[in-house]
Length: 236
Image (tube, rainbow, N blue to C red; front, side, top):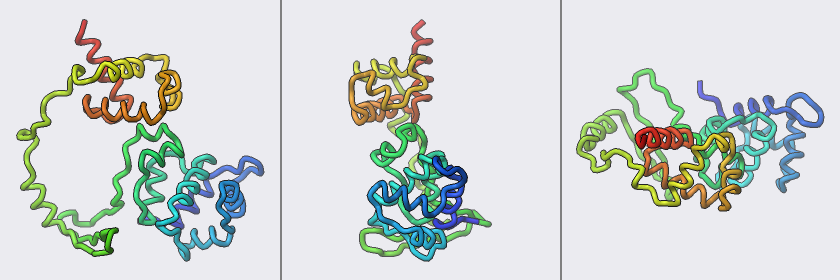
């Protein structure tokens, strides 16, 4: 059964370790940590969040990000899927790259979690309602429409993007960065540490990585390293 935002918040809070007092993080201690970040939230409000009696507003994105960062810092939320699960349970969108970098830049190498969280007893017969954020208009999507859409979609064989990924598509700077990331000495470094060694900002490194990933058709540093090593073998 799908857990609510309040249930997941309580779960992740209980899994946090209080660095000063030991044991799980209490609602009062969570309120204290929020206050240190500039958000005056009472433990009563946190209790109401966990009982789903009060919900964090979609306009309070900064509060939501700080909450996730605190839960991650104290080992309640351990990875990006945990963070996405909490967000989706409250109807919030997934983390974007800038938000991820505020929490843990290593998560940029992790694929986002699919946002539906929906299971069906009969996957061929279902209807869901989608609400457009801009005007609140509600649309119904059903299995028959999706099946028709998939049948009429162009095949991958006819796509112009089927040409194999090529190392030669990379710019000189992208090749330098790719080779650097493939070296064993940086295998365990975060993106921030890699950027420092290259003498560039994390955002600049991130832009290079997006371009490299797209050209080599990979979605992580591990995939990039595999592609570089394969290219090096082919040159021998």
